[in-house]
Length: 331
Image (cartoon, rainbow, N blue to C red; front, side, top):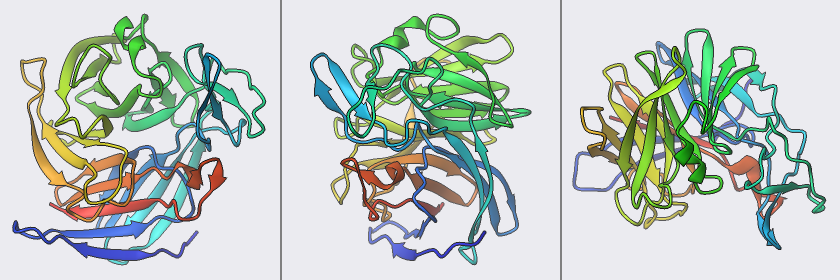
């Protein structure tokens, strides 16, 4: 399947050496809540992205409940494998894999799901809100926001296990802010690393990251990631390269030249507190027009990011201006 794409080429204007930033519109209005690089073949990147819980509208409070409209209550989150050619800018959809679970909230304390007419929907105990993905051998691993939980999924999209607070994960992460569970996840050295989107209420500016061992099904280590400043309040994604360097998107939900969207790197050491360094200011490199950057891949040559366009939904209506983009920034 071939698509028509729009291309925008931007060059930064700082006094530092200039980096070429290529921003390409992705086809359709799919929400991109994660990104994983399967392989590079010459000029072609084979990538995976995925949706979150599905098309949903703006939440509103009714009594003691926060209601969240779901435009497609029967929606199943899915992965999409696609290719991108760095020379021709051609994007091809290759494979779609639907998960065998819904995207509805699953427990009291989460938002109460309603349909577009405000009719209350039943919570789904198996519902997930996936935000990140990595592949390890015969399985995919996903981080999701509701519980929060770590999902073990086979390559057909069947959820094999769900690791939750109080069983395999620390009970304290139940205190995460609503819709601020695991936002980033990376596979490295036979371990799974999952990071919350925002600090727990008592953790000030520190965000918790778990090292999860699939063989023992336990958390073997915890780390604290410090947010840069009060301008940033959340993580967009987490990835890791073959040398054990982790990269994270740190951001706020704003757009324009004063918004905060940056990539930092760090390596794990003996300390529980991460020491990070700035790699790139995405706003200065031309990506200041999207509010939610939720997919990150780092190669030898590029930082690659995608934004989540929320299925083109804004204020409960479809907005064709909310688009998905993939950005390549030369390292």
